[in-house]
Length: 510
Image (cartoon, rainbow, N blue to C red; front, side, top):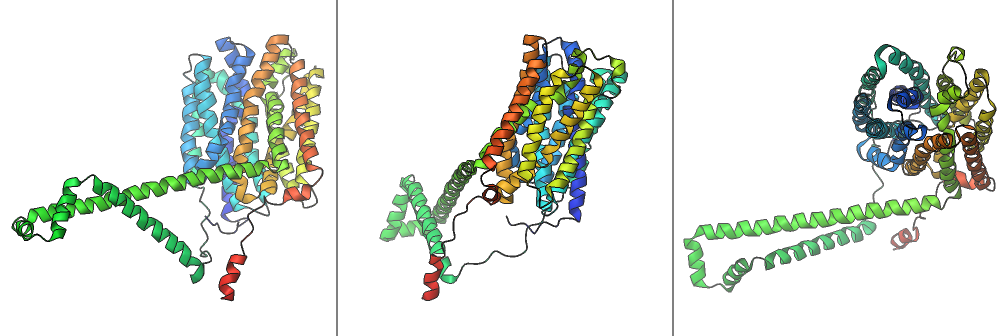
């Protein structure tokens, strides 16, 4: 489908606004799940590693299903997917209030809510990239701050709701708030397809195509009719008798007009079944061609070394960078920080600084003199160093500073779609982004449980955060080594098949 040129404004700013609130409403609770994490530890009495699976699934499942989410958005559009996913997120949150054990939360909160968030994230990013071109970095930065503002507000809101209504009442109220996603989805007007017709082929070029299609259709229809004809032996005998021109049979047919009617009905039935058989065969061929093209495009993407390095970097980044937003409150409790010293929840600090980071990094991405890939690599390296410094923090002030740094650097999510677009092109964005988000979801799902298991094993978070920091640093250096030699070649789109111009010269010469 051909789309009109990105308007870079107009209704696009409405898309930015509703996408902001969509991410605010769907990601507010899953990103601020650290507040619920402490309550679930006390309620169900399970280990930190097992309990951390709930929050990690909520953030990881949607990303793991990113290829499916991208396919849904490409097939049905952002508006229907957003409305459907709003029901999923709200229903999963409300269902979690009735959880009898931790395993029920794996399904209701981890899978249902997580899958809904993944669909919503893909829908908002895709439709925003369609509406913006020159200001795409700013637009992506604005919508991605929705999840960060949601983290900041929901961290305090959920703690307040738990004090007044308990854990069950908190989840019910948060689920009811998520129903506002339906109103946001209704405003996601799809970008209209282009009114300009595609260039038509010349007469000499179109003749072979029409002839081949006609010949194939006639051949298939004739083949299907013959197959059906073999199953009607009695009818073929009747047709043979009629063709011989026997007067006796002809007189019988004149005497029995119903026989002629039945023969015509049988012939019509055969033709209809033949046409349906041909349609099913062509549909199967078309679906097979779609799957074949998808696999071919995937292989072509991984031939781009920067794209291959991106999926390694995002995987390691999410293994090491996601656990602080889930476990920072428990880290403070394990560091013997008193509750009266907690002026502001550490998760809220991460949330507000993430919003600032997404906005500022998104604005920086629009400057022509800034290499966005190197900017992304810099955020990974600094974040890895900050994670390694967490074990040395022994006071609330130090943890708050590190939380602010980690939150700001986590804002590199706003420039990641920008880097992906520059690497593979806007035409391949949905496909490539779905693959990358799959690996990001895998890292999100494994990171917090690994950190929790490190704590259960050593009874301290020191080793866990050294491991997290090394993972993020490794991902940053791998991406840097892949990008250093030739960033200019990586900026170009993936190689497309060259147009066979010699085919057009022959008709012109004739």
